[in-house]
Length: 485
Image (spheres, one colour):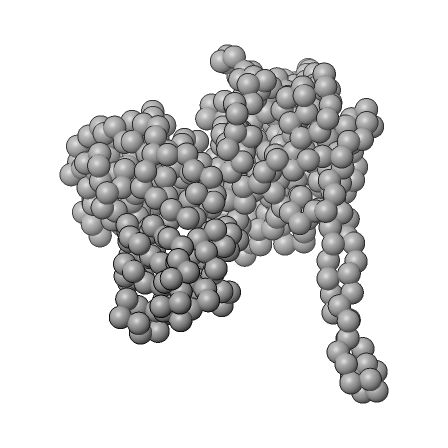
């Protein structure tokens, strides 16, 4: 099997009397089975500069300027986290009749980050800092800072840090929608704690969904590259030959845990929207189009007698959602959003992920062989166009007005705790069948003294958590309702 060689250097011409000898060989490498792993290891951010549009260099041979410019904007992120482990000691059980005591210990981790602003905002991966007790950032000139965690978004694996620096070297951000297949890129980071390491490769694919982010509503539309990325590169920079950021290195495709050919980066456009949301709102403002979909394949196109064989097939339109309001129908095929071609579900989720509720999208669908344009007003998870904090979203998703019980009510009902559902407005309460005037006594087996205590308990919920509400029907009958948050 011939080896696949990439030459990055100054071309040397050889002449010979008999003619010109051309050097070049290529082949494809393949294997069955693949394990994709994540590497272990008030305003928008106005200081982030979009690079001016200009043609990409067709045959770059010198990466020195881009590398030197980028390494100063890439930092080493070191974390400590506390872990708890039960060490079984049979002597405790046998002689003392008590279980072993859980032991706490600290673990260290490391990764990379990219300086976005001169005053110290830094982007990295969520998995780099997840569960960290302390986060220390070291710049390329060996200055150390303790970092503050501004916010995280597990659905894109992005986190935002802040250090008390000034006049820091920052990176310029390119428009990642303009990245092209075959374009040279550099990966800059700290693999295996080897600081300021630079590797080179090309963009080998776009819009890759590798099913690696284990989160509800995850957005995966990675840039794929063959630049060498290893544990410790997570959160580092993927830049073009002008030294402009096109992505945040996040994952590798590997069966060994180290680089084996391909790595994946979150596109810069998506990252920048997430970072701005975290800074302004403390959480990502997700926009929803209100459909269920399938990717169009040749088989699906034949089965449904579609006129095209690529795009996103609208399998269901959610009543009252953004697509429904705009007039998009079941059976339509979404082929373009804001001028960007949509061929896969990853293309669609990335396009939506760059926008907030209340923003409008120009959507083109193919309906019965004809293209039709629509203007879609995006909505949040609750079906409105508001920007919501996590707490507001959780509370309002229950869809009810609540009120405290008076002392008289409690005496009359023989209760020490409880609140009343004064109105059901839809949402989870309506879906679960909870009626108006239901008395809530317990939430997840915790007594509810007043509305404030109910809201305090609710703020602790995360997607997927079970919710158990216990109390009394208006007729005095005890009852409970269970559903998933």
